[in-house]
Amino acid sequence: MTVLEQPGAYRPAPPPAWQPRTDPVPLLPDSEPYRLLGTGADLDPGLLRTLYAHLVRGRRYNRQATALTKQGRLAVYPSSTGQEACEVAAALVLRERDWLFPSYRDTLAAVARGMDPVEALGLLRGDWHTGYDPHRHRVAPLSTPLATHLPHAVGLAHAARLKGDDVVALAMVGDGGTSEGDFHEALNFAAVWRTPTVFLVQNNGFAISVPLAKQTAAPSLAHKAVGYGIPGRLVDGNDAAAVHQVLAEAVERARRGEGPTLVEAVTYRIDAHTNADDATRYRGDDEVGEWLEHDPVSLLERELTERGLFDDATRDGAHEEAEEMASRLREAMNEDPVLDPTDLFDHVYAERTTQLGEQAAQLRAELDAENDDQDGNGGNGGHAGNIAGGER
Image (cartoon, rainbow, N blue to C red; front, side, top):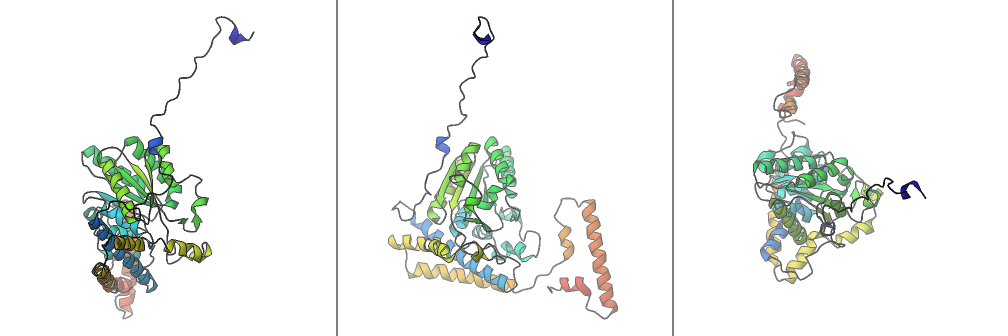
């Protein structure tokens, strides 16, 4: 007889049956990306035409911005060609008072939200801090560090809820960003506090040159949502109507106070990571060609045609408007900006820190010394004068 079998021996109580706080099944995404185009679904003709006009404009915007990098008018441009459906849908589902939190590749989303294309490219041109007023446009600064803007989106949404404002924050990130700690911290914070936040992951296949298979073993990125107790949605990222519907539902769910949603849009980056990247080193033309057959603009044109909603006037009108936008963008980018390097120290903090003050004074002294040297040698005002005069 063992000690525990003896009469009166101590026996620990069996642990209570574990019950999950939330049934995980409703949180799981579909096994296949959700689609609407080509399914015969009941779709709003007006919405389809609006999406098409934005996609055509977005494609032209990407091509023009890419050309500007080759002309030296942009320092860098991360193209979203092939991902326009995600960019456009993210902008169109938001109300004016909502906030968009873009990553560095999401300038098109900012433009689709109504921002001047020139302002949207200010940061990538190297002209100024952000290039636009985030408060006026309700678009947070373009985030170059991966995923660092996601906790900011959650914090803003949480603050809005505490204030009683029915504001929703939609945060965009790439598949590479889901490997960052900020991504997981943001999802956990949002889930625990049920913040009105929508996370849109544009899974375009590569984190620069690293394919998704080397980043995660999860069935999909949308499946990561269940680990935080929030719904995950998987959608065809090249199906503009489907992305719009899924994001619209997630935004309204957040606005009703039902918490965040993680949406994975499966798409593809047709162009290289940036103009400094050689994509041929890690993927072949055949792979790109397969995705070109699933191009978001072509998919929508086909849908409009099959529904009898596409004609020459629809196509020509969209392309003419896109060309006008590209022309305005080229003209503005051909003008050299008037820059003052001391602006670097403005708008960093509400009150300039001692260290920033010292750095600003050091830069000003260097500029003044160079200016004096140029004046003493019959120069034209030196480096500071060149910058103020717009020379680059």
